[in-house]
Image (cartoon, rainbow, N blue to C red; front, side):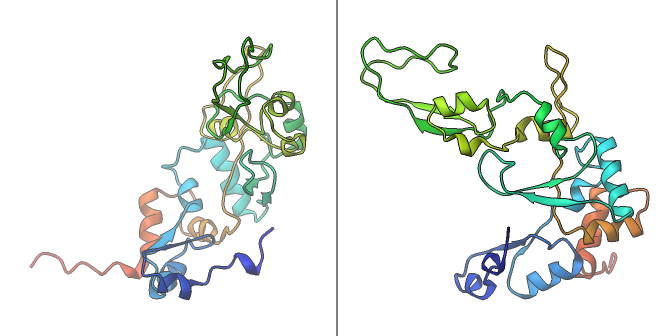
Length: 240
């Protein structure tokens, strides 16, 4: 999925004279020190905060993730088609979630939150034209062009009817509902179906593994910050 061409040339970035931050496998005291030493303003950290007791992750999901890290059995893979946006998306393989293809196939495709919809220009309306039966779109005024929205995670026939390519809908997951479920906000449908979580973390688990060694029962966001900053925070000299 990723290779040498994805490695940033930090020297060239620094030459631009603009502030920048390093992200991806950079959530440790050592990587922070190296980033700042190389001219970066800091680092972007996600996984150790997602796994902290202060995050919004469902407690049961978080416990499963921590246990997977503790036993070195947690698997994070980059799914090239999960996101309706087309960007590669990291998915954690966790029982009872949408990482299981059986669960994915059992879910009826639906786009009812729409946070990741893509705008497109609808066809120019002609006199007497109307929205297609079953469409969620309003009828445009004759002779006008308007903006519609589609999502590769919605029912395939609806996506195609709005101008999307059928191949672009294959394997797409509803990240909106899946990520909401991961923080305990999964919707229950009228037929009783409950939206299952989609869990995402960074693939570099070095930082949370080290945090677990120091905090076997879990850690807070403040403890994560203190650990990451490490020796970069000057010791207080106390009141003078």
